[in-house]
Amino acid sequence: MGRRPRRKAISGRLRAQDVSEGLELPVLAKGPVRVRHLAMFATATSEFADIHYDRDYAQSMGLPDVIIQGYYKTATIAQMLKDWAGDGSALRRLTVQHRGMDVAGNTLTVAGKVLKVSEEPDGKRVECEVWVDNQHGQRTATGKAILLLP
Amino acid sequence: MSALLDELKEYIGAESKPVVYSIDAGAIKFFAESLMDPDPLYWDEDYAKTTQHGRVVAPPTFYGGATGARTMKSDDPRMISAVYVPVPPRWLGLYAGDDFEFFAPIEPGDTLTCRERVVDIYERQGRSGHLIFVVREKGFTNQHGHLVLVRRGTIVYRGPAPEEEGD
Image (cartoon, rainbow over all chains, first blue to last red; front, side, top):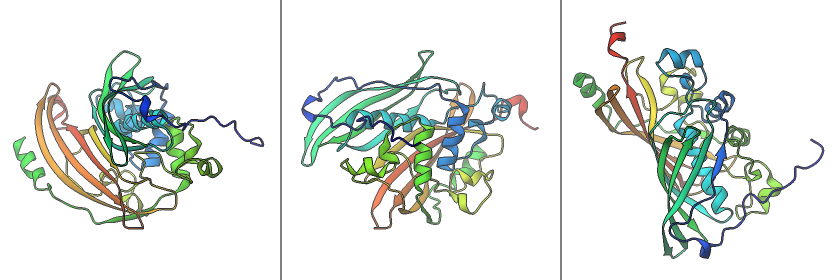
């Protein structure tokens, strides 16, 4: 790569005064998520469970196909929150319930909504509801997040 | 089945030895790439200098590999966790839930110490059969002695279908 990649301001600064209860967060579309991504994720996290990249093994365990890691979906929710809140913000807590399985090849839609906004000494505390849907309209993960905005 | 649960419950409170390991810039980039996250904050020092962080950091939820990865083979069940809980073979384990608390960013070059313990083990009768839940907590401290991350993860284990039992 001789030329520098064009810089897109991915981590722009969110204006805390624009955040209020009920605000819908920008949707993050992800996918299709391939076995390649799951294998890379397993390597980066040192969590080698064969059901996430070996189709024959996954099917021998009674699964329909290779399964997207729950941890992968948790990480995509963290990305959606970071892309939205941007530079200067801090993700404080992320709690996720994995309610359904997603197989490799699925396309995920990661989204959320502001539940509560409160003032804290070091910024604005924002509590959000978050979720992951797949292309079949199944909500396979739900959760809550707490962020601090400057 | 309760006999199995009784046996596993002995492991509640079990703690790992501290696992000390370093955070590699390549693994951070790899993690971001696997998530298809194009944010240059995770790999471009020049870009990172223009942000509040001032340097490359890891994405939230990344902590590298803090299991026994460095001392055991990759197919060892203890790879997922430094605290061994003897769930029988052929039980399918999946993450049922995750709870991350973030205190400070993790950066390439950090030396982290992970301490892990088994918080709870319980069972439930699910639609698809008998389920055992194991809740583990991993706490990560950096080289400055600061707690940077806590992950409380719940793995649900499903036993083999009845016709498979006794294989």
